[in-house]
Image (cartoon, rainbow, N blue to C red):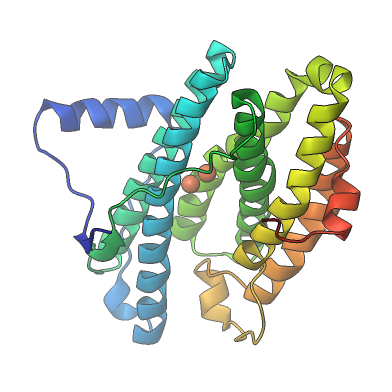
Length: 278
Ligand SMILES: [Fe+2]
Ligand SMILES: [Fe+2]
């Protein structure tokens, strides 16, 4: 493990110019300059915002490593070329999100350096599963499950966020996360015939889902006790953890489970009987 202080930095060379050009080309929204008069805000609020966006910066950066590895698994699974390209885009999106978070932390007068384990945890290889199934499992977990919940949480948070720059920040992230959440369902759609024909694959994926639901639940459904948010915190885009918990179950029930069932996966049964498997 290589834990240390890390902060996003820019080289100042032509690579940095290329990075700006890529960011501009990939961005779905007009650029916004974040500039809060943070010294005029409640210091407690500013402290919470800095902590939140520094943590988000760490998570976004880690997500990039997940999608980067998943892109390699898609290559090994013989996925369609467009799927390989979009997965690499998604890895890049997460790096762009890391940069957005850094801009926000800086605009709030915060320190960009974070304690960060630079070691990349290897993506699950699912011993015994074929390369095709391994990719399917990891696509389902990271996009159909995880990114779908992220989208629901961003949308709900935006409803109470009134600060215009914070709304722009959240919308910028959400505009890409919506693609990330849909990716897995499109990936399944491209394999609908395979899934229809291969009962063993469907059974194996359904069994995996039992495990996946059990693993993701504590990760994405915050557990009580919950601290109530102040009006200011809501206005500045902080997330209500109690609502986030409800959203986890609602997203599973109303979007993820029916979405997976369409492809013959026993997602409803898997959720009802979710448990960690060896
Ligand atoms: Fe992201
Ligand atoms: Fe994402």
